[in-house]
Structure formats: C-alpha cells, structure tokens
Length: 365
Image (tube, rainbow, N blue to C red):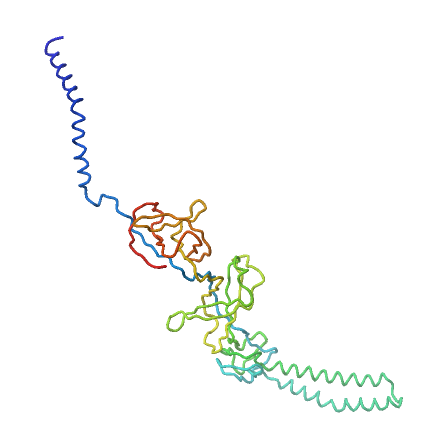
C-alpha cells in the first residue's frame, strides 16, 4: 500500500470517529430549536375547538300527533233529475239559494195524466152504486156471491188505476229531497228531459264532513267519537284552526295505499266553509305535560343504545338516555338527562368524549 493511500484511509477513519462523538451533542442542540420553531407556527395550523349548536333541557309539554291531509265534502249531495220524461213547463228555484225539503223545484207537462185522472175519477160514483145494488140483492139472495165479488173487484181496480195515475203525476214534479243549497241549473223551460237529464245539483253543507286517511298502524288510535283538529287557509292567507269529531271509520284497509279512510263532522253552522277545500288534519294520540324533549338530530343510535353528547366546561361528554314518547322532531328522555343539561345538536357524528367544543348557538328547548 502506498503512502498517499494510507493517509486517505486514516483521514476517513478519523472523520467517522468524530461524527460518532459529535452527533448526540448536535441532536440535543437541534431539538429545542425545532420545538421553538413548531411553537412559532401560525395559530391557524393549531387544532381549534369544534363549533356546535346546543339546547338547554327543560320540562315541557310533548304531544304525539297523527298528521294527515283531507278534503271537505257535503253532508248530503245529489244530482236532481225527474223520474219521468217530458217537457219542462216551469222552474221554481233560483240558482245558488237555499231550499227546504219538499219544495217544488220544477215541473214537466202532466196534462195527459190529469185528463186520465179525471176520466177515472168520473167512474167512481157508478162503480160504487153497482157495488151497493149488488150488495142489497145479495142479502135477498137475488144475485150470486160471484156477481157481487165481480163488481167489488171492478171498484178496487178502478181505485188502483187512480192511485197509479196520481203516482205518475207526482213523477212530473221535481221536489227537494232535503234542506240545502241548489246549484246552477242545467236546463231551461221548454226543454225535453228524461230521467238521465240532470236539472241541478243540491248540497247540504251544514253540518260539513271532513274525509281523510290514516296509516294502517294507527287503526287502533282512531274510532267513532275521536276529536280532531283541522287547519285551512283563511282569506288573509293565515291558517285557521277548527275542531271536528270522527263519526265513521272505513271497515277495511286499502290494499293499494295501506291506509284507512276516516270521516269527521264539523257543525259549519254559518256555512262559511264550502265543500271541496283541502285541509290539514291533526289527531292528538297522547300528551305528556312535563317531559324532557330531546331534538331527534341530537340522538346517535349505537349498539342498541341511544347516545347524546352534553356540553361540559368546554368539552363534549357522551351519555346514554332511555327514550319514551317519539314525535316527528323530538324524543322524550326518561333517564340520562336532567333539566338544565346542555345537549349538543350539531356535529354529533364528529364528537368524542373529551373533545374540545365551543357553542356557536344556544337556545332553550
């Protein structure tokens, strides 16, 4: 080995030994500087508390309701038409007015029937006289029982024919079958009508019926006598509240919609509500006066348990609750919470016990 090469190898070995000796000292000196640099980083790079919304629990009334939509329908409704055919000779109603049961509304020509009635009634005295004479003769055994029965049968037949003609005359009159409001007439005097011709529509709107449907799961909750509330938009575009009572429930569940049809009645004494209006129906199933109502969005189902997070000195803390009554927006907490607890309602899926949080919006539930 030449002398220059030995010097090179010796230098490399000395540098290696010096590195081993100096490395720990250089590392210890660098660590404080590195920690100082990390602490000097911008605050935006540090982990900030999670902003959340929360509610303060307090006892309140919690109501379980059935919500549905329905429509108002008349108590009674019929399309009026004559029972016989003929020409209308008179109309006795004004469109859109109230009529009473039995009022004459219209009439068709009955002159041929009136003439036939007079013809038959003129035969009554003679027919009765025949019966009288035959009865007198029968007492003296001057005529047979058969002869007497024949004239008696002829009188009975004559009276039956008269009753038939009178019934046919009644069919030429159109009368109101119940009290109500008569609609627009669809015919005029002089028109020829048949039993298929509709003259006008008659409706009874006091009382008024409300028809709606409920899911099959609520069948046991609604029956005859159940009180309901329905809402309808008033002239000022505000929702007006009315009370009604169920009087009939359909006997079977619809196989197409799996709902049950229900009808309620509303007095409508001033006839302010007309048939055909859409309404929102509300049925109260159960009401709890002093309940702790937790917003549904605050509850996390976890392994068969219901978990909520409570705000505690700037940190989130999980707690298990036992639930009771459920509504569309709230759940009753039977155990696990107390009045005054602050329940977190937003960002719940990100929360962990002990996690730093800050309340952005706080309200009382």
